[in-house]
Amino acid sequence: MIMRNLGVLGSLLTNRSFCTNKSNVLVYNYKTKTKEPLKCNKLLTWYVCGPTVYDSMHIGHASCYIKFDIIRRILENYFQLSVFQVMNITNVDDKIISKARALNIDPLKLARNYEVEFIEDINLLNIKQPDIIARVTDFIPQVLNFIQNLFDKDLVYSADDGSLFFDTTKYTRYGKMVKVPEIVPHMFKKSNLDFALWKATKPGEPSWDSSWGPGRPGWHIECSAIASHYFGSSVDIHSGGIDLLFPHHENEEAQCCAYHNVDDWVKHWIHTGHLHVGDNIKMSKSLMNTISVKELLNSYTANQFRTLCLLSNFKNDLEFNDSTMDVACGVLKKLDSFIANCYAHLNTYNSKHIPDITLLKKISDIENDILINLADNFNTSKALNLLIELISIFNKLLTVDFHFNCSKLEVIQALNLVVKTLESFGIDLSRSKFKSDAENSLVIDITVNFRSKLRQLALQSKSGISKQEIFELCDNLRDELSLANIIVQDSKISSIWRHEKIQAKKN
Image (cartoon, rainbow, N blue to C red; front, side, top):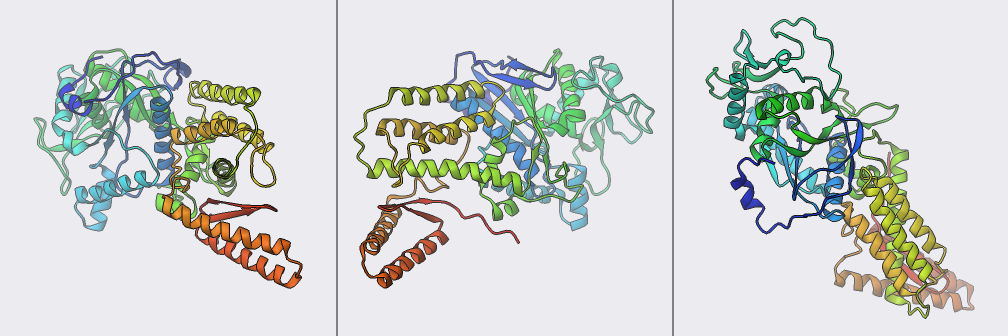
């Protein structure tokens, strides 16, 4: 693989260990419509189509980036691939200019404000930042060089206003990713399929000088120029939402193959499905049915929304509604409760059971099945179902006092598998407070233990009145602790607690 500007990458890749093993991962490729073995060298290169920063990110966009984050974590955590990821920021665009004009603000300043908000949002959602975030306005020389190369190959023509277009009729392999629409006459282009490489300047718009006159980059050329700057003539993975398949990714592939003189520029095209909000309606700014990330987090946690994304394959459309979120919240609650029960068992119970070989083998089989399913086009839904199967087995061993009727070895193995899997998927268990600081845990332990002793006194008391009063005090304390996201569960002989964020009530 040819790498451009390896010096730029070299400083960023210092001390990074690279996997030399071939992965057995199958990935669905929209170009071939089949699952194909993931092909990459020691370093997996990945280009992500980033946002056009003219407004706040909505959860349709967020679901796309979460799914890519899950795939990246799987490749790194399960298949030990070293991923180098680049994402662009489109910070000059018709929509940005139009909104800036309406608000009487500089377009680049508007874009910068929304770029900062975008980074804040992906951090709130526990999405790993790409190794490089590249603004298109920082790559104008690369864009101009790219256009000049295509111009020299007679693949570019100039419109009456000075804008430059890619001539799809002269690139014979145009349409290899999708069946393109029929060619029809166009007002100022040779073909309706031709696309802008350089947009001639208009009054009040940002512009840069070029040998063809002042202007700004077209949309498709920016990704091609940025990705080629870092990765050269071959990219392992290129990803975006399914709505980018045509024309954006078709146009990228065409101009990059022409620029690099190659038959295929991208090895694996990965596209996520749409997010729908009732009645199979796509979430879209144009439909004015969007929910911002911060609005989402007023009702749900980042972990709960990520769980929703995990419950279906990345390439499928995703339904967002009360019903699907209830399912996601229920799955996460079941996982959280199991982890809490395991910690309670290990911290308080001295088991005399000997290890059960059959149970240990079942845990190992489930772990192996999880790996097999993740290697099959990142089947996270099946992986979660396997964790639920494991939890169901252990819940049958759970006694009335929240202890498992097995040895600690099985509990440790099962706990490690659940925790490792969730963390590898980007579920932030620190937000579930299982890893809360020791001082706070000690305070809660003391409180819950004191309450447990009060309940025991009530259970042993022969005075009905005093017993009822004590129970009421205990219940009041339990309810008050729940306001602080501390959930207390009682049995006849003990009590346990866990952290759990209470879902906000909907009006």
